[in-house]
Image (cartoon, rainbow, N blue to C red; front, side, top):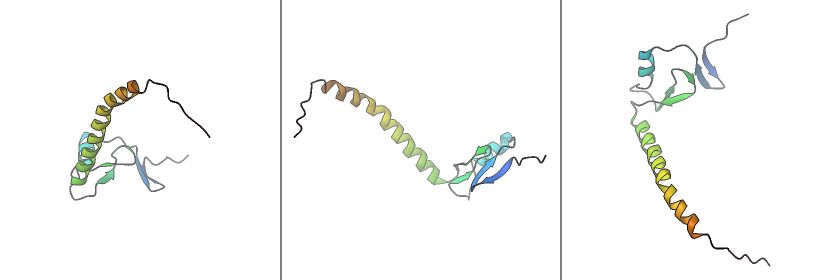
Length: 92
């Protein structure tokens, strides 16, 4: 029986199940001169290249959206309390 490859591409998506070293893990997320997305050092798909400025913009947007979602929970509770009265619906 032939051995299955532990790294490669499937339908254009890279995968790698070889045991990475600590240096390899750290250097895979910091690759100056490469694009925003780089192949993951372990697993399936891509990850952000933290040496690219576009990755930091993506992280800032995600952080802002998470902050907005967290702070918006208080407003939803207030809106639910204000709508306790019954609503009359007329259908023709």
